Amino acid sequence: MLYTDTNTGFPIADIAIDPLQGPLPTTEELEMEYKRMIISASGWRKVFAQSKDEEDAAPEISLVDRYLIALATESFYRERNPKKVLVGIDTRPTGPAIANIVNRILLAHDVDVRYLFITAAPEIMAYSSYQKQAKFFYITASHNPIGHNGFKFGSAGGVFDSIEATQIIATFRTLITDPESPALVQRLSASVSPERYGIVLNHCASEKSEALAAYERLVLDIAADSEDELDYGDLIAQLRHEISQHPIGIVGELNGSARSVSIDKEFLSGLGIKTHFVHNLPRDIAHAIIPEGENLELCRTILQEAHQKDPAFILGYVPDNDGDRGNIVYYNENTHTTHILGAQELFALVATIELSLSKRDAVPQAIVVNGPTSLMIDAIADRLGVSAFRAEVGEANVVRLAQQVRSRGYSVRILGEGSNGGNITHPGKVRDPLNTLVSLIKLLSSPERFASITGMPLPPHTSPTLSRALAALPQRTITGAFSREAIMQITSHNHGDLKAAYERLFVIDYAQRTDELENTFGICGWREEQTEGTSCKEGMGPDFRTPPMRGGLKIIFSNALGDDTDFIWMRGSGTEPVFRIMADALGHDQKRHDYLLFWHRDLIARADAEISSQKSSSD
Image (cartoon, rainbow, N blue to C red; front, side, top):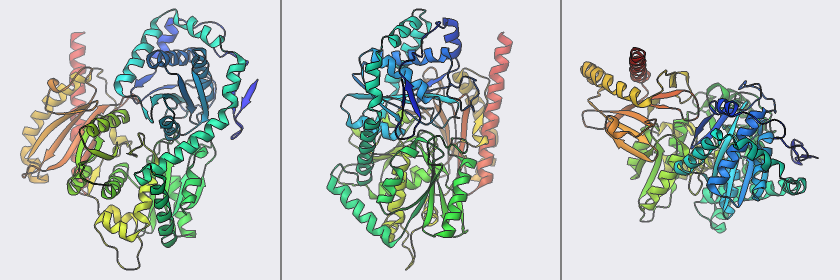
């Protein structure tokens, strides 16, 4: 019997068909597909489209991949021993087929499965935070192309930390190499009764409704920085009044993502915001999924047209497919056109808003970011008397470090990965474009609040604007995280060797460039920072790294007064087969930025060539 989703009309699953029936895959076949996976604490990803074309939007997956999914689910069950699991998918076409297998393996272990079908990442995570002892198994590949898919595991509103994730990964690896594993999961899948599974699928709509209610409650808690309904009731009333005086319109170009069936339109309209939504049906995917660069152009154009018809429209946003990240376009009254807001500037602006408005009391304040987050944050934190802490790239690392910092007596209102876009606002544990939008709404709806946040009183009879707020930020020139200049292909598999070679070459180069750096850029010194997990160590060499030495490496430059001015950074991606790099340069100085970035790229390329040459010689 085929079940369909009452909201979208999409097929959910046919309970009469066992996806693991038929011949078993060999260990060699499983091993081959396993090697095509990218597995990290931030998520597991793979091209699950049967054609292996990452742009293929077909829903079918291969038999071998079905067994990989079953073994991944079995690993999750063995390590976390869940009693209740929330299962959800983004809008990728392979999602239902993957969830069908996940549900069956969990049901075979007598787990209480609550299937939400299509749900945004912040939505299912919010639901988990209000469900006692519930864990979540979310099926998504986030910003990767449509043919990819994968998994995120977690509980209590956030993904598992690196220790918990590593345990699941280790068990998965063991199961892949065990020749008895395919038969085991085949028996588990076959043992699920259609009646039991049918009950789960019949409750999809009610579970989705409960998740939406939980999500709205959490968004309001975050907006008000309080769990008291009176507090967020007062905030809503205040914002509605202010918006009636200073109207705001927002364009949502949802690109067919999971946010298209979430609370966005109703929530924003409830605040009195004017809205215009485009591609707001699930799977109505109009462009590449990652909300960066040219993929924001459609929203920018739509916002330009909307503003011409109604000047209230000044913001637009585009999420990725699971909806935990959304980047911004805005109208600039100085140029009379719309612009794409850089991820680093957006994070810095939201941090400024929330840190300025946070409830201080007598508790010390902190912000937690990843290694490549711009030095803008350090300047903002210093101005507001806030301590800044850094973790390795990866949302789970930042969330875990924030928990550690709170245990030391700090209040951490805002955290996140400025380099990747999106903010995590306490008590949330995941990025969320609605939280970002609420922060911007607070800024733009009240001239008095705008002046308090930016330190820039507005001229009489003028409204707050994003361009004015951006002008108040520390001025930097930063490599876009997903620009071509931010990615390098590296032949070296041993990142420890590559970093050691890089460090040797850097010391030699710096000595040769000392006069040029000082005379041209005022750079008089440097230090090295290395991030792994939640740790940030200052120092050069392997003594400050641990195997497999895949953390971030950053060279921070300083002026004659010892103030940090610029940095260059590098790290191998944990979710994509690329090496990411960037430069963060002082001021609006493109030449300064390009000098540092090109030098950085050259050092990496020479270090990589040196390692490759040594390997060839030893072979």
